[in-house]
Length: 476
Image 1 (cartoon, rainbow, N blue to C red):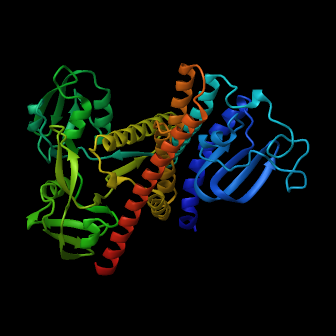
Image 2 (image 1 turned 90 degrees about the vertical axis):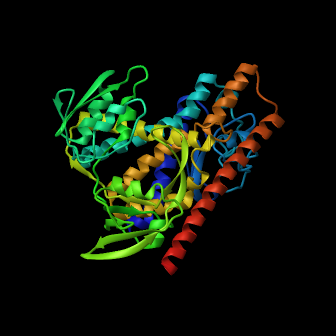
């Protein structure tokens, strides 16, 4: 049952919280808000309370807060909700109230209740409130998950792979199979412990003690790698066990399944996930013979990695690499934590996921990330169902992640989005007056075209992935 209602829960909660932020801010600043809608199109349910009508609409792909404005039809574009009801209800119409303001009654909306009548600070507060609420939702969910399920910890201290860094040749002294015992003289309990203390370490010389000796690497100084560079260059050991297979991917088409243990690739033994990546990365477009252990049997499969553009961690140069669309089994365990640590973990998870989304957007703009990676409503729906089938933790993690996505993407300078509206209001303030009706119309049309283009591309990607998955199911 949870799987069936998961898409509604995921979409609905994230959208509701975003629009609630705008609505509360409008109320606090005295802006008249006659409608609070979740979804677009024909109303499935509506109920008026006080001066606001609350609506659930047929198309659950967004929502809006209708606010009073000199340009009523345009103001609806603040959240994409133009509905052409500027004239209001007439006597005898269902819902008409002779004591109410437009659109529910005959009374005009006082000028001091218009959105434009408020100060720039108040308008910016209204427009940024939705983003803030999404960030708060993500933080609260991440914190609650940490408190309920514990903190994920990578328990191993064994090195899985070491990637060369041109500005830290000494790092090559580490070898796969080494066990890191201490960092700067302090014992290391787990890889998570190492990563956390490495991130907080001051600039200077990093000393890693292993079972074979000590490795000294300059870190954080001029010309030396940062802590992030070092963490990206040294992987922890992960067994070659598949945890998940992406729909429509080469792994899916070849017959690989979650739980499979990779025994050999190209007749060469595979002992870690890093070794799997080393064999797959240079083999884009090449058929690779795999041997996998599944349920006590060893099966022979053939996988053809797809070519994907990726930045080289050592040089920063984009290059073509092979990918099969499979993820390793989760190597983490759980450790119970207290409220303070859960709050810190929630804040860290919100920040990390937010920066990843920003990096992805930047990559799309610079063409370092392919638009084929964009997912739309269908992808989110499928992810919601899959997460629900995995349990409440996965489902609420997806809600938090989507909430961060909505917060970041709404700050893009596209006119219909919050970021675009903020930019327009600031520009009008600098100009000393509002743009003309025609100018605002052109700006909003450009924003609508941009949003529709993104929607079409992401939906096309969703459909293409669905077709690939269907072909894989039908023809193996």
